[in-house]
Image (tube, rainbow, N blue to C red; front, side, top):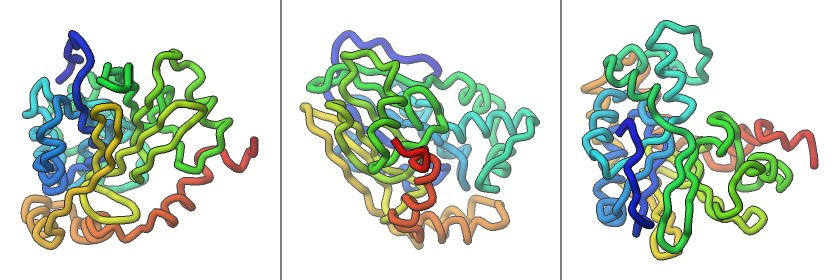
Amino acid sequence: MTSLPTFDGPVRSVAVLSDVHGVLPALDAALAEPAVAGADLVLVTGDHAAGPQPVAVLDRLVGLGHRAVLVQGNADRDLARIARGEAVAVPDEISSWAAGQLRPDQVDLFDSLPHPVTVPVEGFGPVLFCHGTPRDLDEVVLVDTRMSRWAEAFAALPEDVSTVVCGHTHMPFTRLVNRRLVVNPGSVGMPYGGDGAHWALLEGGRVTLGSSGFDVDVARASIAATCDYPDVDAWTEEYLLSTSSDAEALAAFGPRDGRSAGG
């Protein structure tokens, strides 16, 4: 888990999860999905544990062994810093709580996670997996981000990388960017625009965007029973019920992709 597996040739199929944010019932729902369970590789593009069940989620992901590759996200970097006593400004107060739950080996894991990661996939060639963009964990790109911003974010990519998979913004989409295919699987644990655990499958040169449903009421009860974060009920109500629409999320994230600069 702390080092990338060696690929003798292209991987037949890759299931992509992202932004689990410490929600174990959502992760389990995604992992139980036949398309995900049957994939040769599970690649998780960051922000694994900043949520109500950080330890259990990391243990589940690490338990997948070499079948899983974890990419570092901005929340993973920040949780490790907080756990070491550094002052970090975080947008969600649960992050500070989650950092205090981590074991030392989990802090070390976060420090060791790569970003970005490139994997050869049948029908796609080399596929680059990242959190924000290939150049920056925190960078925001959206389905309607202007082409010049995409060009800046992809400027250093090798020409043979024609598919990029990113996370970070919690909204699933596919789009073309000057002949490159860009995929965002959406979020497993904090979806915007619709509930369920979102994922993507790369197989046979095709991308499938999917979502696995689970009983949100049962999930909220199980989380509350295992989590002593003071506002856990409010947190799960907001995120497991996906109270923010995709339109609201795009309006909130939009200024962060530089669109006000024009171009």
